[in-house]
Amino acid sequence: MKLEMKDSPGQLVAALKPISDVGGNIIAVIHHRDPESSHHMLNVQIVLALPEGRLDKLVALLKEQGVHIQRIGKERLLYKRTVILIGHLMHTDLSDTVDQIDSTGFAEVCEISMSMPAVNERSTSRVTIKATNRSDMDAALAILRRVAQQKSLLLIEPMEEIA
Image (cartoon, rainbow, N blue to C red; front, side):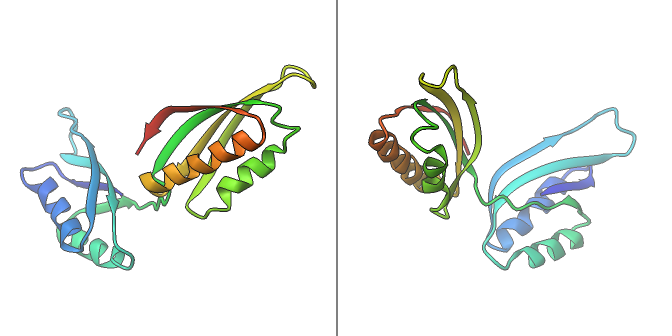
């Protein structure tokens, strides 16, 4: 959520309390206070986990607190890892490799960049996977390890982990 509220003592706490009141869990709060702003407003971005069906109640509670909601976005896949695959990626059906992750329902390949030097040479691919939680990411990587072994691909992991 991206929120806008008065820049005065207690406003941030007043905006965060309704999240716990509806059973939500705050994952991150990002705010930047511009001391030179003449609007006396504070923009805050909040990453939160919210039980299904509680969003309408949260929106109502925030409005009661005088908080303006600028944007609400739903991101289901919160964990991200990037790996490198090296081998004959096209000859071993890269789309099948991607489908084995995507078909899980809890993880998906969200980015691929590839270098293919020549037809008979090995390719290198940077693959980014997103998953719903840490254990699902572990399961997706286990699938990728199995597929890499079956197709004689070298898997280098992880380059990063973002949650």
